[in-house]
Image (cartoon, rainbow, N blue to C red; front, side):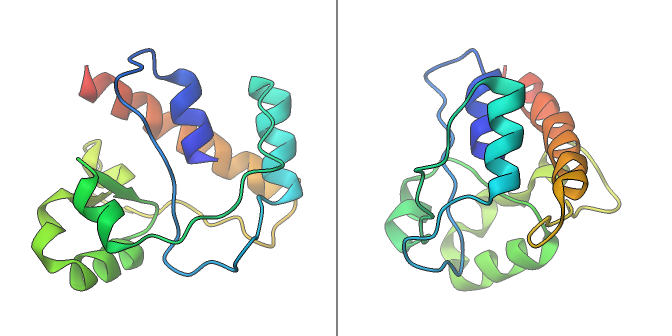
Length: 132
């Protein structure tokens, strides 16, 4: 959801966002609730978007890597030690100092996905303002 929200809200098309996971199921697609929320809120169809496994080249090429949780941030910094200075949680990078995790809605109902969407959107708006 974060990739879709950022790319929809961000007006600077020179800044692109793509998402990747640290442990994905090959050929997996977005959940039905994520698909529904992005379709309803942004008229965006992500039903055919396949999950992407993060790799060294992606980390090396990225200007900034933002994670949803501290545990994923720590894993990324430990795995890609030479790039740890460009890996943050989304909340941390946007100035939050406590509760740096965004709820993982995986397995939840549409209400949980909606709560997650709202939280991600709040911090993505802050991110876009910071990047200006």
